[in-house]
Image (cartoon, rainbow, N blue to C red):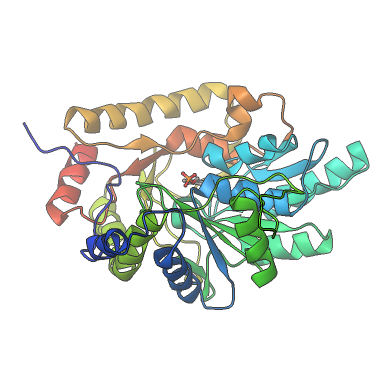
Length: 392
Ligand SMILES: *Cc1c(COP(=O)(O)O)cnc(C)c1O
């Protein structure tokens, strides 16, 4: 039996146990403490230093709090990139608001500026009200078109939230992902580029927002000797033990990013001559992905996503899905884990009534796309094994 190759396993850098041991030795086995502060400072420094960070129990919690801080409530509409993991959208519903889904553009696979503006205009026309926030995502580590998206957000004065859960270490024009919106979301779940065994963070515009985030994340306890509450809060703070893992992981992060980028480069080189396979590349050198996952498109003419592909009707999409599944199952038969790209939110049964603005780009990506094993612990020989199955 061959050894299983997984999609994205967590890798330890070596220093994690020291920080966790310290938490035990000093009896800081609690949901706060020196590792939490230290981890927050490590993250702030890594992101360029100008934005304070609040460490939380999950990326989903961070997004929930970002929306809560923006005052989103029942009856509001929030625009969200459709092509993403469900956690980008579900917090909208936690607050009783309605998601409005917007398609991707073919260069980055992220929020389309064209359909974003169409959605804003469409909602104003239909409801007489502006959407209250915009959630864009840096999917698989690729930065979204933040310059164009930011211009539209500013024009309509709608706050922007950057879901950078998959993009720690990516940058656009030299600026770190996570810092493009009013708020930025990070995740340290087990499969992300760094892990705290489960955790997340909210990148805040200033210290007041950071303090308010921590306040809401610790049951919104007012300052009084007894327990006094004027607002409803949550239990969303990261534990000092988990933050210790995070501090060790931050020391290893530059190496993880370098390895994931190398893995992407090796796939690109080895798959270059395989007809019908396109490895996802950044649209220009300004877009520097951490290549959290290397992704490929299968079928078609072996070029970038074409306009005619995007207009495919159900029948054409089913044919492409069947080819993609054949490749995925062939990999599985050889003990290699791969996964289809995210199924767009506007196609999810749970969101079947939510409005959608787009041309089918994300549907086509879902039909054609596959994520390949990309963990930092992957050996060069593992990559060759994957490529040989695809080539075959
Ligand atoms: C992982 C992820 C999240 C959620 O983060 P958790 O820490 O798992 O709650 C949100 N958005 C995207 C795009 C993700 O990949």
